[in-house]
Image (cartoon, rainbow over all chains, first blue to last red; front, side, top):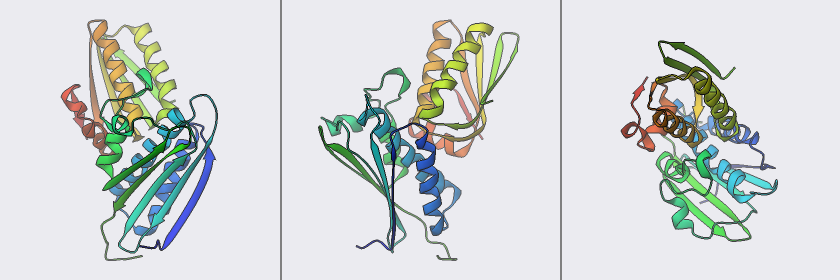
Length: 146
Length: 103
């Protein structure tokens, strides 16, 4: 399936960019005329994925994070967050609720929330090369259309 | 000011506002710590009515603050949780650990 629209944004792995990334995703999603709840879901899922890249992918330095947003004809929005950081040695463990390597400042609920706020989540990671999280969410069709 | 506190009879109400993400969480934790330290409340009420966005970073703030209150023999509850923050807290089943009232 080919996307009917897409944007790619790249930014430094600085925590100030978390708000930028989720707002950008919400702006892109606006063309689907989403509900407030859908917008909240999209912002939350992007915020979690981008925070993971900032906290875990580049623990010692500032690196690049890419947010790719794609829109498909069936009203599916794809949110993809990619980094070129340290990678995840055990992706299955990383997705488990409450698992975190981030200490008391992190809850370990990031993947649980990403999974419950979207329809599907794919996690691809190569230690030393980087990680890509791709989520898809189908938005309700509204009569007004696009 | 993302945090304002009011204390009455050793009960402190802390009103949180704005977006609680990883970027904001560290400062918020520090401010909550300072407020608890200086006012020594027995009960802490976290009012989230003004929170326009929250992700799992907020869960860590709530759990850490609750642990602090319990360690000093106190308690904590969370009130006026808006829909988006409420969905995050419910996804983590936090209402089973902390008394929460949702808006």
